[in-house]
Length: 192
Image 1 (cartoon, rainbow, N blue to C red):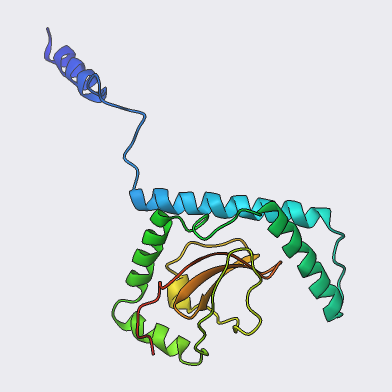
Image 2 (cartoon, one colour):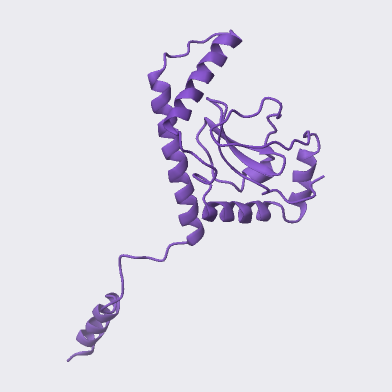
């Protein structure tokens, strides 16, 4: 056998995986798989909200607060009906909660912790009983989530947002002013 043929045979042998080696199951980053699961859950909620909203009459541009609140209440009622058995942890599963704790801990390292603390200084301390499918509490300010934290958390569809209520991270539906899910006691103590 010529050296060229031997070299070609070796190349072909090395180019193909060994028998029994799984070629179709590449190693998946477990953190990425958890985020993908979160995104699927968020997308399912997003589709449900859109379906509910399509059943309502379209909200025309108005400055009437009563009309806007009525439309919001209609969306909230439809979502509550569609998610009648919703509970804490439906979107923020234990695995997803663990990943969010890790991401927030990363965002709170070093100088970033100081930036988060500064951002939250103006926040009113609020401790409320949170419930999935309930309206976001009127007396709770819509505390914006510090950008340092947001950069570490998965991006949300436009109608959903992260909010901090006390030490809890809330997933809020802006269209229906609803608490979609929340993670209690996720923020480290003390922040101030």
